[in-house]
Length: 243
Image 1 (cartoon, rainbow, N blue to C red):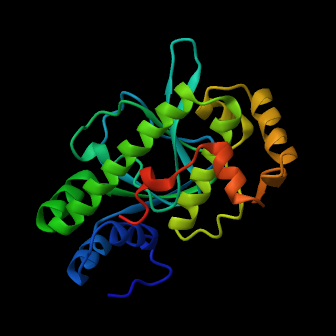
Image 2 (image 1 turned 120 degrees about the vertical axis):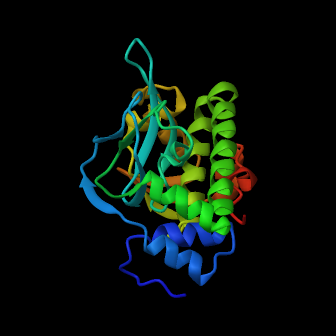
Image 3 (image 1 turned 90 degrees about the vertical axis):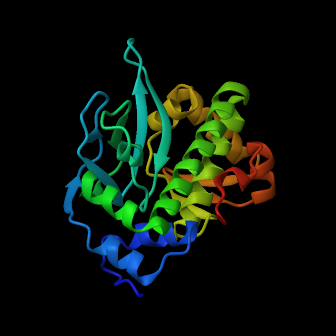
């Protein structure tokens, strides 16, 4: 079944069909889900820790992050999200949020009633398998992020985050991994890597000086992928892009 280019679920269908074979009836079921759309500006809280959740949120356009906040007020970003990502799929089974989800750029969102999505998963097991694989990949990425923050030095953390973003953006059909625009600020990168904004800027300058990349503001061009991957200790297997 073909999906119209202007269908707001196009990015989700692209992702789920890469994770598991979906038939025409599966795709039709996704397209028939009741939904509402909302545009939010950068910095908007999409889900708040402790919130009772009755809808599931799909990121159609833009970028978002999941994060936790310490009692001291410090923010730890635990993942970045691209178009096609369901931002809170765990709420199919847990109805209270245990973390925050925030837009890091202007974002177009689609909200599905949780009960409707649960019924669809029960009726269309191929969709359930795709969502289950998506959850497992999320867990794999979380494990890699723990390693990144806990055991890699500052330059490697930054390089690894850039490599991951480039690889995921390519898999989502968002363009070439050789050249892209970072949606996150240096403060966002700092909160994702356990560094300060000043240290992030310094490490970006080091990677530029070493010849791995060229940057202009948030515009990144990776000019030497082998060097970049070595600097990042990056191997994409944990992303399961070919799943």
